[in-house]
Image 1 (tube, rainbow, N blue to C red):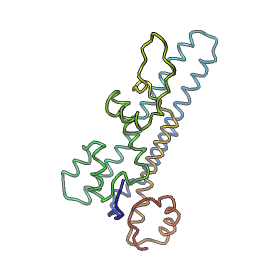
Image 2 (cartoon, one colour):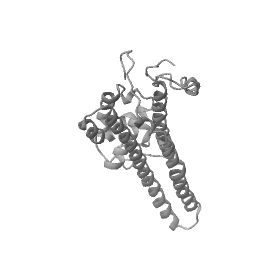
Image 3 (spheres, helix red, strand yellow):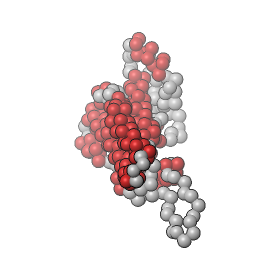
Image 4 (cartoon, rainbow, N blue to C red):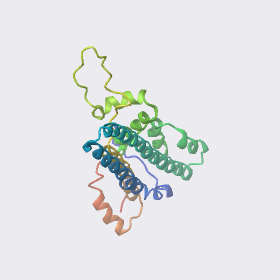
Length: 243
């Protein structure tokens, strides 16, 4: 987080304009793909649960496992959409503002942990200045755990969001206790993915707000829109230009 009171600089680019539909893309992915697919599988699980056929007990278990794995796959897909959006954005900014091929390469290759400072290099504005950064960091950890399983990301995620794992019951005598925080029992839900999607939307909305604030000359419609947006983004540390 920022420890000084100096407002960061921000130079508007055409790359900013190109992000206008990113939030809508993620929302459509959730509403039109994720929710219908999971709802359909949950309806099938309910049928098996209410069935008198003993075979359907096995079908219920298999369907529950399929739902869990599908949610992990959707988590990976959502993170992939977000990362491609972000890297295309910062790559476009690098091309427009700097004649430096290394910056363009780095925009595509640097790992998530290094993009915070890299964004500051490009824009004088760190990624963790954005209100949704903490949740976007969580999404990155979620995707890493879904992709790689045990590792540093699992350790970080379990410390940051222990609520994503079920609480273990009392130990059973004679049965070795399993660790609580494992990749296979991570509880990803539609609600969680909706929350992560809202964070992505929020990031692009805040980018749009910063773009409007950074216009040196503002049309009267922009002035009216900013009057509506400023209460929502009051914590955004962007330099307000004269209107």
